[in-house]
Structures are given as C-alpha cells and as structure tokens.
Length: 117
Image 1 (cartoon, rainbow, N blue to C red):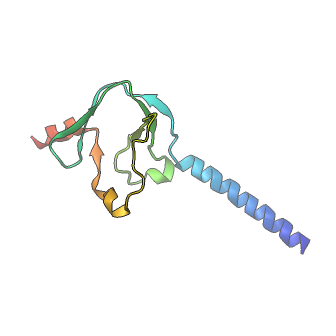
Image 2: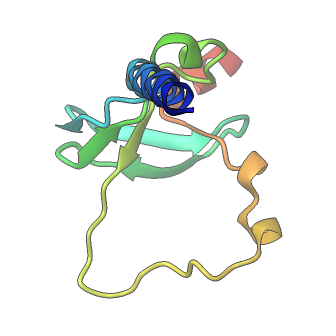
Image 3: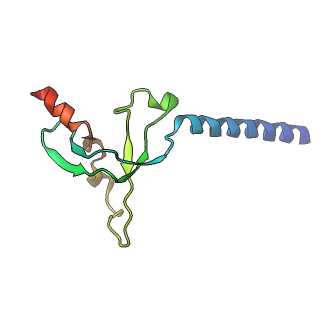
C-alpha cells in the first residue's frame, strides 16, 4: 500500500510540474512598459475615435504566447494600469450588464479608418 501511495505521489508531482511549465510557456508575460506614442482607440467596427491614450502611460503585456496565441484577435495586447486613492469601479454588477462580447476596441483605429476610405 505504501508503494502505491509513493508512486501516486510521484506521478502527481510530475503532472503538476509539467502543468506549471505548460502555463508558464502559454500565458502572457505581464511585463510592464510605457507607451511610446499617443494611441487613438475606437470601437472595432465603428468610425469614430472614442478616446486617446497619451504616451507615457504604464501598460502591461497581455499577449498570449505559445499554443494559446493561435487564433488570437490582435497580437499586440496590453492592459492599462490605473491606480487611485479612492474607489473608482463598481464590481457589484450583473454579468448581463458587462456586455463582454460587445466591447472590442482597436488601437489600430487610424489604419482601420484609412482602409474604409
């Protein structure tokens, strides 16, 4: 019985180590950086500029790597890091109110509008 538990433990340890490295290879690096230029952001299929992000803002790399990157919507993904000394976001909202599938924004907005003309 002790041998079975020992080999089962070894098997699970090997499995979890492989799973850890699999996630490490395929997940975003979350590397911090600073924007090098101003970016106009627009709704993906829209024609208006929604807002501009000025250069110098701290961003974090959110691009998937490895097998997770197959079929990725846009290759250069980043998130904006915002800090505040007060509560700015309401997290107590219904999932239906979040509109997760309708909020696609593109930083290649100028290139997209130029292709429409």
